[in-house]
Image (cartoon, rainbow, N blue to C red; front, top):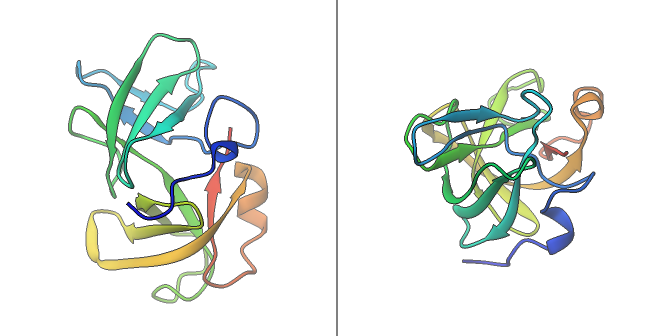
Length: 145
């Protein structure tokens, strides 16, 4: 599995990793901060399986991280990642999707395209600040709650 994610990076608190979209096992979907409900990772099962929860307590289940958006298969979720230059000449305006999440690195790829997969170190930043701070080439910025 690699190094597990530090507990300070997951959970329902400011500065923790935010889930972009999730499709629950019952087929319903949710987007982070939709109607004020945050979607977050509460526990890690492996580099691709996590216990994902809604902040209102309505849903909590083990889901698989997929490298595409939106997560279309029941029991899956996705995390959008902003990346600085280096990957295919990206200027940071193209979203990439997390495929595997580890303590210090994240495997990312373009939407459902495994040929673009690369492993990068990551930082945790708010949606507003990651748009402005893409000066570090080869660093992935993951949105936080």
